[in-house]
Amino acid sequence: MPIEYPFGNVPEYGEPDQVARGIWRVRLPMHPPLKAVNIYLMADGDGLSIVDTGLNNDATRQVWEQLARGFLATRRPTRLLLTHHHPDHAGLLRWLCERWNLPYQMTSAEQERLLPGARQAGSQDADGRMLRAGVPDEVIHWRRAAPHKPESEPAGLPPTEWLPMAGGEQVRIGQDDWEVIEGAGHTPGHASLFCASRRLLISGDQVLPRVHASLDTWGGLPPDGLLQRWLDSFARLQSLPQDTLVFPSHNEPFLGLHTRLDEMTAYHEGRLRTMLEMCAQQPHSVWDIVDATSALGQTSHALYLSCGTVAAGLDLLAARGLARRETDADGIERWRPTAGAPANPGL
Image (tube, rainbow, N blue to C red):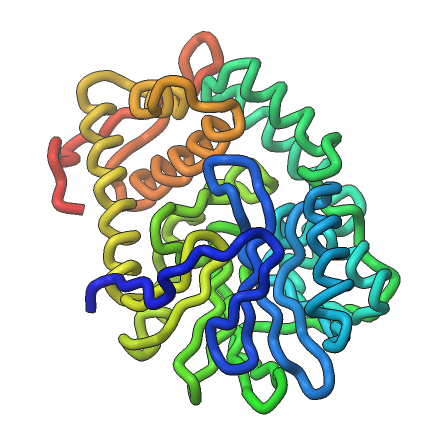
């Protein structure tokens, strides 16, 4: 089934757009290139459940206040569900829960990433790994500064009740049961929600129709096995019906889930081939590969994300017995094919 976009309109920021019975998509502002994050409002008894929050900044709070005066004036929020801990999804977790006294649901692995000190501990480990990967100072300095920017960090956990959810469980929202599909790679315990009776999937960042989500290598997760876990997480999604309507966190709702999963797999396997071919010509560090394959003018943020994805790819090549790392005299880890590895493997 080819990828299709059944909704022709792109609503304005803060304008609820009904995408299914009892489900509204709301676009919240973000910086380019993504420009927007989708949150979802879901009819739930006499009120609404909210999926994700948007960034912790004034522009997003203004949109929520606009919704409170309009769409939410007669539909009181009763619960907040989070796909994962990233700031465009959980940035206003505390603010929304305190404003409407909401309980919140997210997986344990994601909730742990919001505990005090969790990001700092991961960041200290990431510093050393980035230096060994040859990442330049300006990118490392950007990463160190990012947590001190309010919109780059959720404002802490709320005092309201946390309701854990886990893969395989059913979450009742309104009249429908939604299966929690827990994935790994982009974040440690990303939750997508699937309603079998209606063939609807709230995919979060696990499946996006036009862009590829980054891998959480530098955010505190070691690269060991990260890309393989990401690819493995596609298996449960591949088992969903082909005509499932997907509600992603970025871009537009779409049909063609299986096609997109195949594209995502082919994209990563193609990158692995490219990296191995580059390392066969001469040893490359993570940064060597990013520098050679990134478009000119990329922001430090974009380069930081690319470094994490490349590091996870090199780790997978090593796990497959195709590449190995060596540390140079300058302390930089560079990668070369293992003895006997094919120069152009059919990965």
